[in-house]
Length: 334
Image (tube, rainbow, N blue to C red):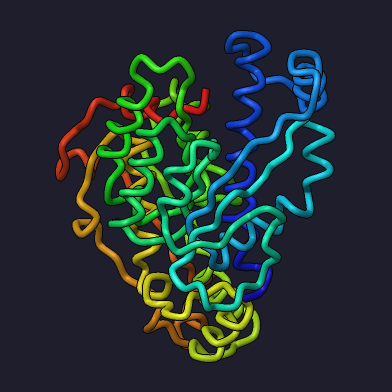
């Protein structure tokens, strides 16, 4: 897989994890004080702890995104140690196929396993990173990790879209009466390169959002941009996207619009506080797009893009309203 497939999700998973660790440092130093600069966080940590602190990680999923996380933290390790006073250590990486060759270097002292309980039941693991995909076992992993008091980070938009209320309830239960808060981060699940999740959770809480519209799938955006600029066919652009790592082995979720639909469902719940069934969201992919479509769009002064679009007035007529303020703040990264 090419580096392009790792850029947004792997980077945002790493950034989300740093936000959680920085939060812990701030809480330790100032009893919950607001955000500090990188240099200030490093200074505070050194003053409070007196030494570099090791944060132990358990990774569930060793594919393209999981491997990207390992490589990013390996490459950025010295800088993170200097700026945050934190050193990250992988104890276990759980994969489904132990015999499959991996395109990342296994960190020193880290075991490769096919048993997820080697991660979940390890008391030394502080942060569980879930990038295995799917909505069944992945949900069990996330809920079990939070129940045991471990922080959880995921890039699994299908999991979040299908189970957001259940995960929110589990997150609240894990923090009820807890001496140390359990954090849940999923910034990488939707538009990780922007980012958008924490903007909706925190920065726009005082605003009334009327609509959401945007390009929310990288694979199809790359393909459509290539078709527009080069005139290549859909088939050739899909092949190019696969070679660069933008498209999965089975690209149906991307080109069919289903990945974008899952992301839009999450944005709807966060932006409007409205719960909708994913299958009730109309979807149309790009499999039928041809060069003629681009020619016609150009005549109209435009181009062809796959957009996720939602308006609050239409949604209110079709969906039940949930407790907006409680729902928006349930995953706030304090």
